[in-house]
Amino acid sequence: MLDHFSTARDLLSTFDMSLICNGIGVLGFMLYLTSYTLVTFQRIDSRGLLFFCLNTGAAAMVLISLTQNFNLASALIQVVWIGLGAIAIAKRLSRPTAVA
Picture (cartoon, rainbow, N blue to C red):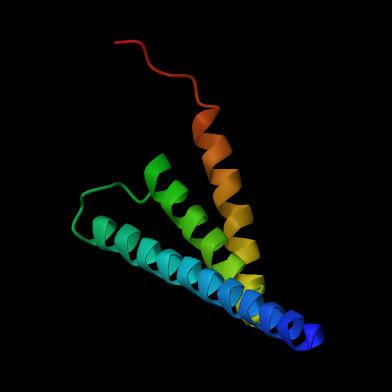
């Protein structure tokens, strides 16, 4: 009898984790759309730090969702996007700030 409860608890735990990861992936999707919408309507610069932070965060969220429903092509895209975003962020943060 205890085995049935243990199995049910394990299934529920797996189901909860899947839901949480999918939710994080949907938030990543929304973050991607937000960043591109902001660029499209010229609210942020596509070469600016905020754009790369939003896209890198979105890629990380989508990659988290892929831990539950893996897709190699999508995972590779997200890993490359995170790598490029990290380089772009580091480059922008290493610039000397202009003194007015």
